[in-house]
Image 1 (cartoon, helix red, strand yellow):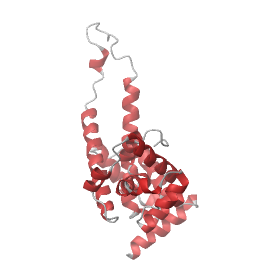
Image 2 (cartoon, helix red, strand yellow):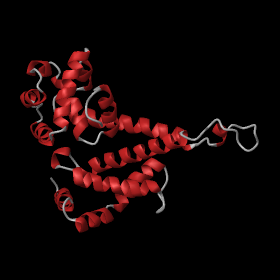
Image 3 (cartoon, one colour):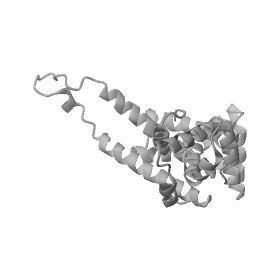
Image 4 (cartoon, one colour):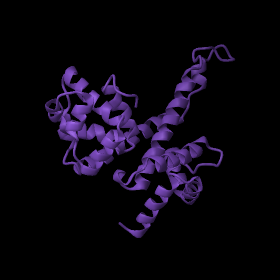
Length: 241
């Protein structure tokens, strides 16, 4: 590990409990935060842009939730920033959709729907797709460290509702016990017995889907916000994403 990387990790650790240290870290990494915001906006952000404020807060969230087991800090922070910006876009789009879009406009001929077309929508949807692809690439690379591939996941995913529910209970238990997830990242092994005991399910059922659990647990621990939202939707009845 290079001295620069070690110094950054040390600063992040200090910033977790020292607000002044956190403020200094954010100030020093504003070029990075602005750069990540610019990737989303496809332009340099202005000081008054909401997106820049959201990116700064996402960087702070990354400081608070980071551990060395999650890999390079800046890569982790970039994932957090992108995810928060996408969440912001989706909320804004949803709020716009709550307007009565079929109300007649002033000329009584054009529907309001036609007057609020946002040329950013097409770009933003493309941004979401690209962000999803990037998360998949990142996840795939990380899974290789656990000896698991995307093909393994497809082949190992639960096919029946009963086994899906068993996996859901195990994942829910892990998400409610961060030390289980930390142990998983540290050892690069699914703690099957602890999951089975904690979730009150049969270990052999979990063993059959160990490779699937590797992917799901990684998604739950490493800032994959888009994939996490999807997988939590699949694991119905689990904890909220």
